[in-house]
Length: 373
Image 1 (cartoon, rainbow, N blue to C red):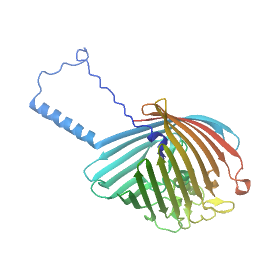
Image 2: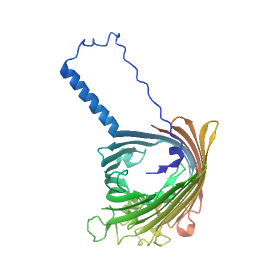
Image 3: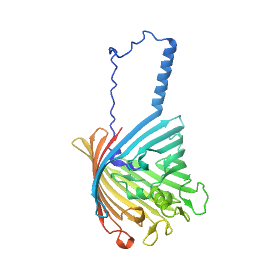
Image 4: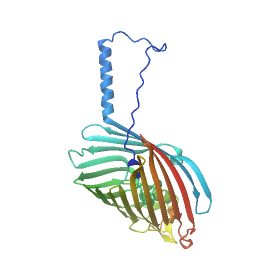
């Protein structure tokens, strides 16, 4: 789940929908009873109280993205399309003082056989206002990497490392410091291994805010990078199993000051995969990816405007379809309340012929219309 800074920074206004009263004089409307019995009044009060309590417990959100694209790929073939890129519906429930839950439904055109899925389903035990520690269990995005971006396209670090699975997690937040450890039973099995919760990871972060300055730093470790979505799908088409785990690390940072933002992230395997699992230039790959972004958020004619430039790079990641170099520029503007329009230009450079690539360039122009409510 990408953290879209370009839109979350903009969409802070919430519109209310007026409730239209029914016309009691309408001939279709049945006559109202002149008097309600005590039981009917009691039942209505109970229903009203239940509805009020449910409304207090639940917080709904939704996001819809439509994207139009045009460009040319590494084979010099021209492409263009319009897609319903994302429909995301989420609900956060405060069950009690110490129990909360989150459910997110996700649809992305062309993904998951064009079906909607339960993207997140988590139960959390904890209360940040009363204790720094918490525990979560369920389908979640593993906290490995930040994947923050001002761009429309997913960053290469996210394409390499994003991991979602059913896991258990324990963490803490206090005095700007946060951390978590987690475990899950992944889908990529070791040759001759057992079917156990042997995928482990940890994350540590620190955030500070002073005046107009905001700084966030983080690092993470994962004992098996093969469990990321991209590598998991790739290995399923090659070796199906792996001979041992490939550890990985991530570091990331964000600095914000007076409308300026700078993002940086680096993700890398700490060991090489074996040949036949993930290959590069005739041997096992040790994939890595990093990104840098600089963005400026300001106002133009009373509307919030974000300008962003970025550079991304990957190493030994040709087998999973990543370019070696990527240059991006994005302009995003809040055109109406809760509605943004973003334009992105992306230029990719493929790996060289000696590495198994084409040494060609590719480019794409993307226009994204997004609504949040």
